[in-house]
Amino acid sequence: MCYAPRPGRFSAVAAPAPPSKLHCNHRPWKPVTAPGKPSSRRAIGAAGEDAALAWLRERGLQPLARNVAFAFGEIDLIVRDGATIVFVEVRQRGNDHFGGAAASVDRRKCGRIARAASAWLVSNPTLAKAPCRFDVLALSGRDANVQIEWIRDAFTLDDIR
Image: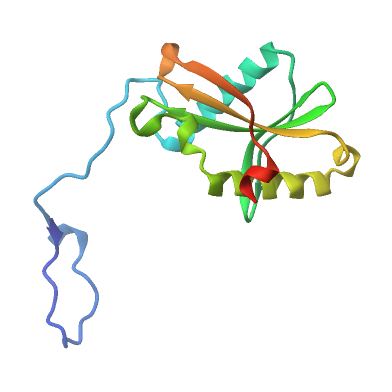
């Protein structure tokens, strides 16, 4: 526990002690990563999305947008599969504990994705009439051992109503 000598409750001095007077009996946890590997969740997520996008491109899908954010939700990838607009949620887990990556896409998350997809279609009227679907790419494992599970039509709008 970290603490600093502080003046009494009703003291005229309300500022905390300077850092040199701070006493700690523990060290904050810092993840240990190998050189060149991403260490933050954001960096790991970006690397997963990069891998997912490359994987989808290999299968002939054309990217339209990435990390489209609105106040009520975000879409990781938007791609075109022929005439169909595909909204892709990318989930990554290092292991299958707690159900794995695919199980982490719950009904609430699906609702957020659907609202964001609707807003994106409104802002892209030339594509608004195209057929759409919602896919999940579940990445499991790390580094060279990443396995990708593609769940086409992972959910529909009827599933979240």
